[in-house]
Image (cartoon, rainbow, N blue to C red):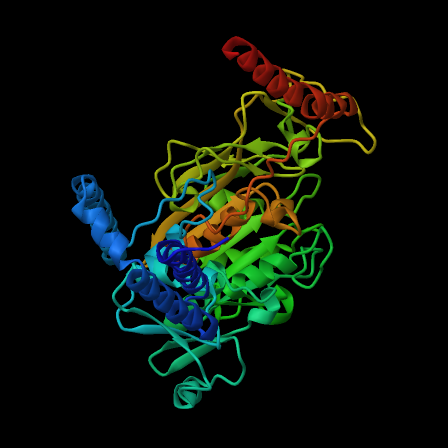
Length: 513
């Protein structure tokens, strides 16, 4: 078969356009014009130019014939569409805006990040040192830059700019350094599977912009939850979470220390199993009376002997066990002794919690003792459902649980109280929760349990700019089919749908023949 000039021009022109498109696609994916993309771009340009030269007569004939007007209109319309697309892309580039359609807002920066970054008073720089771009991290940094003109981001190839790597102290490919004035923090991408996220970057910003790390002191000596216990009853995840937010943690023994050490910003009593001595209770009370802050979490079936402290702060901790008959506890693999809370009090601690849940395995009531008192200012943070009630105690192996109107209380029931009062120029604060297991491993990472604990510490230390809903994980939306449903779906896909298509085709052919 012999081709004429116009057919050859059409063929090489098609190849040229394909090469140009391939070059553009590679550039959009890689973020830079590498060697292969350059070859495709130059080769495509040469092929298109050759096609124009070889097919010049045909092009002239097309525009000089009767179809010239139609061709001109088509060309004008095409150019107009291209111009509109260029304008739209330019506006989109100048005015960056994204839309997060996920239910959990997985790709929207948290309130915590927005508060911290928008409040920057001087320039803060995040620098990533590598040879190739990281699209996910680069997109995340674009979101950060939109929050404040003081937030800067640099992507640096250390081979091309070794002086910049030396300035930031970067020594390896993939290093990410956050710099604020003369202070720097190196983020370890390897510890996060090679991918850093919002929690890592915001944690570094908090650490660098905070004047001083505050001390959270956990009381020991009475069987409290341990910061070094990695079991389901331990608090290792709490310890790691506090350190990410630039707190330091330590354990204290009130008797050995002869009181609360002066460097403690917050005292935490997490689920004691034995009673406190009266002098220990008095030590915590003295710390609060001097303007200190404390979080006390007490589980059922234990008399911690902290009643004097609770009474001084108008808090009533019930000698009971809360039962939730709504069946919601089954969601978390438990039964009725796991009350679920979806009604939260109006407090900075629980701001934004409405519409979500927190759960408390084996809890007791903690409520306001006398609601007519105005000092201290108190608020009930956590309310169970109307289908909850109290029982005096839970016997080992007890299966049948029933409500007794003579001794038990019907829901909604309060599981937590926040109180504060002025002590001179200080604001003393106390939070009491009738459960400590909600913050243990791994419960603290589920639902709003972690937000409740960490927001409580932020409120107690008066770091209210840190109070937020922290980054979320995706909801499990997998559908589990029974064996019968799976078989039915298999036959629908294998027989019914193909058969329907074949029947429709035959029917249309029969009607049109």
